[in-house]
Length: 110
Length: 113
Image: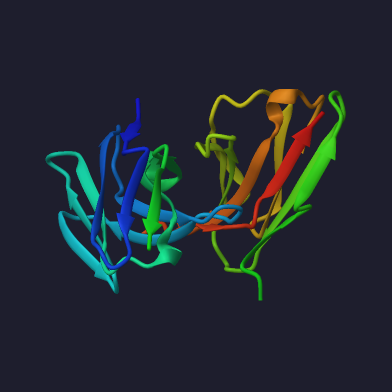
């Protein structure tokens, strides 16, 4: 089967750095993605790792180790607007099926 | 221009009724999806269509019937609504290759009373 594990909640202060980890089990792997969802909003795509290593997009970076079935999302210079839920997701089954983790609720405090 | 749109945004209805949600994307994507997000924010794939063909059906009760008249539209019809169907339903689209970045619609909050 397919499953992903990520922490349910993380709290950090403005300006800090936070790392959200994700471990996965999947049959067929087409990459690990991260999505952000604010309360009442829709998930929005943040980053994608198809190969091992680090991908950087502004304040956000994402890392993948396929041998460890592990990835993380790194958020730097935290801002209040980063308070949201963050989902890791893996694609399998020819790229047509994406399984989402249960989400990590990030609280950013002043 | 809205990339992925859904109607209606809110739907309140009684048990046993039948309702439909419509979805349209103007991104030229080949693949469209329906997801259900429950009160604990767990996002679960229901259906995946590619070029109007059903690819994934995630053991969804057959009261749920998706229809894709063309690759820009994917509608969801639900028969005999039950209390447990209350959730937010998201439509999404992507290209299956490359990053597979998914673009989500704004969601339809369905409340069954």
